[in-house]
Amino acid sequence: MTESASPYISAARVTVLAVQPGDPPFRIVEIDGEVVSTARSMTDVLLTAAANGITVHDLDDPDEVRWVGGGKYRWSRH
Image (cartoon, rainbow, N blue to C red; front, top):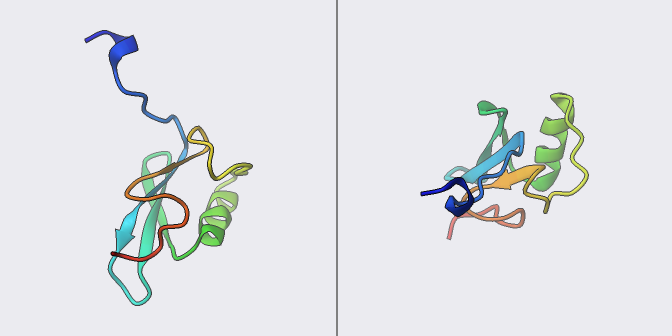
């Protein structure tokens, strides 16, 4: 497989993983591949990024934030 045929993988420094069970449910936030916190809302993601020196301008930009297991509006398990 050539490089151009490989799937695009975001270079985002912030990765938000799938919803985890809890009361309330939460998502794990990684910065540069390391787990740094949990988030229960988009605001938590922004605050975590800022606390780690990253300004997120657009939560929909895959080069800024990579959402795994659902987008920015997914905060509960179905």
